Length: 319
Image (cartoon, rainbow, N blue to C red; front, side, top):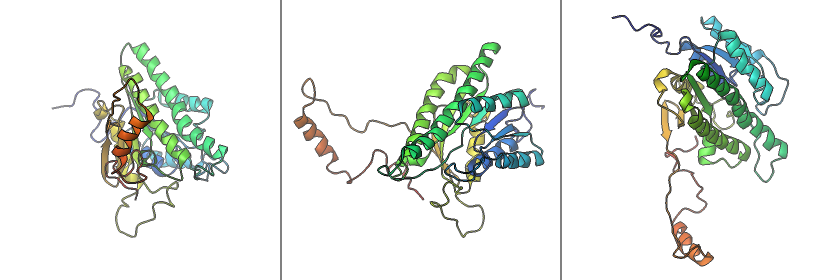
């Protein structure tokens, strides 16, 4: 029996769709761009191309073009884009380039980021601002223009359109990371941006989800040391890319506003925060003594220094 008209060829669920992947010149973004192309999507490969993981050095189109060339060599369609996603106008041009080159935009994968690690009591204003700018503002900028495009398409078509957003958060947000207050804050903000976008765009047919990937890349090379084993590295970016491909596909249409942890052949769905305990005052409002009585006893048997989400998050511990 012949498949229905318009059905993608076997193994290419993203055929006919166009994706943008930011930070796709290296590491996770590169693996994600290659996976989306393998699944049939045309890909705009964005990377600002600075050599330093802290965002330092001269920007270059080289990394983006290398990934795009690899996609084209494998028979796919790709366009390199070397703009800075943290710049509002350059992000607008990035979204515009996808529509101009391939006629449409269907998938946005936000991955671009930098690191400027420092303990909070030593962090400079620039170290804080630069990381928030690239991660959180960068995610917002591309999301703002992609969602405006989908909203206009929905108005023109008179109904829902196809749109997928996959944002990149981190376990640094989930479980804390003492030397990364800027990075952890940005990654937490990305989750808030994702859930807000998911609620706002659902009626237009657009989904937005976030992942917390654990992978050995340029940004984590001093945290995750290389393994000596044979076969695929458990922390290789290639373990993360299939989930991104799936979330970008029609099969994931019912998944929206979710946060998933992924690494080494494992995917975990994170629940929204739940109330662990509740205390009600016996008066109109709490007094200091009453709070002392209920909260001091509640925390008396908890481990000293336990943080909001620390080790109990899915039983995950940093590798």
